[in-house]
Amino acid sequence: MAMPASTTLSVGQVLRYPDPPDPGPEHLDGYRNFFNLTALPETRRLIMNRGIDHPARVSAPGGRRRPVIFLRSNPLQAGSAKTPWQDEIDVAGGRVRYFGDHRADTAVPLGSTRGNAALLETAEAHTSDDADVRAAAPPLLIFRSTQRNQNSKGYLEFCGLGVIEHAAFTELEDPGSRKHFPNYVFHISLLDLAPEGNCLDWRWINARRDPATTLDATTALAPDSWVAWANAGAASKNRAEAKLRSPDWVWDELVLACALVHQNDWREVKHYDKRAAELSDLLRQLPFHPPASRGSDFRNTNSVQRKTADIATAHPDYSGTTTRGGKTTRLVVEAFLANPQKMLAAAYRITAAITSEDPRLREAIATPISDEDEETAVEGRSLERLHHYRERDRELRKKKINLTLAKGGALACEVCKFDFNRAYGAHGDGYIEVHHVVPLHEVGESQTKLSDLALLCANCHRMSHRRLQTTGTWPSPAELRGLIK
Image 1 (cartoon, rainbow, N blue to C red):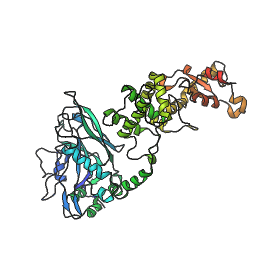
Image 2: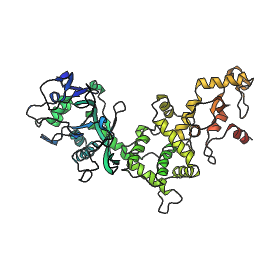
Image 3: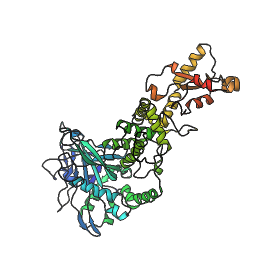
Image 4: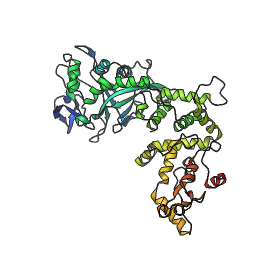
């Protein structure tokens, strides 16, 4: 169905939000007028005067429903007394972290403020097993304040249509008083509007506002992704999750969690701690667990608290009852106690690699190494894969080989002296593998020198990367030579 241009709202479109409200003109200052777009005869005006705004429920055939909830983020005021947090809206990645409306001076109990109460109720509906409950739940329309015409007020950018995946406690700090206070943070998925040309038909929202329109009748105007999510998405997802066991934590994840516990004086980190939310977000970016194995609670803040408790109770000085964290958890704790600086450096490098804006690094982390085994020492899969990425650098390899040949040397393994040319003739001519001698957690992202590289055969290269439990790192070429019988 073609959508009239006058009723559509495009992702990335900036709307004019005049004060006082003026529903008359379709455009103001060259921008679509919010109040004109959303006007509905004989119905109360929609407003976005707060960060979280919602119209009243309507009594329609089939039951009461809330038509919509507006979320407005104001990055221009992030970190101020009015907005002592920073929402995260990743339109391209399809996810949002949105903070509730509890503040340091809020007198009512947590969860009972107008915005948080509405979002907590919506979160329960969005994660329901009942398709009818999900269909009646309010869609989230997400906006952020933006600056236009040298004015930071009165302009809103539409960021998308969202549903809540889960809500978590968090702890924030008031920038003025430095007082810590609790709040909620809502993890939201943006639904795909590509089939509609990344547009939302406002007639759908108005149909949801009309008490004479049945919920089923509104479906004809709803985006395909909303219909799919409401009808089957969450239901099938929840059925699958019922059979899912949360995947075991891998070495890299445990290194990051243990670094946090180490910095917290070897105490568990509570789920409402903002550091738990930050670690949760970081863990969700690691590529080691396929999406099919992830439930909605995958590495959420409650999961982070449980694992940090496992780590804290595995410390030898812990006097209480230990939890059953598993063998790898104990190995990570032992590695931290043996060499905390080395392990903290590894955690830093893993974090830097995951959050890098360089798509090549992110691709390198996501690309498995052939014959990759389970890591049991400092590097973990992230840095191991980055090593392989660096060792595949054609220019470095070429320079190292040319330097060796210029000095009159042969392209033979520096450990076992294997020469591909002598063994395979012309087929092996010029072939040798290049190895970074120093692990990433020690050398960091410093400029690679040719002296940092070693020429190795495939066998010795694999043995150089194999983890040695006694050293917590891989052996140098000289150490490998000493191991050859």
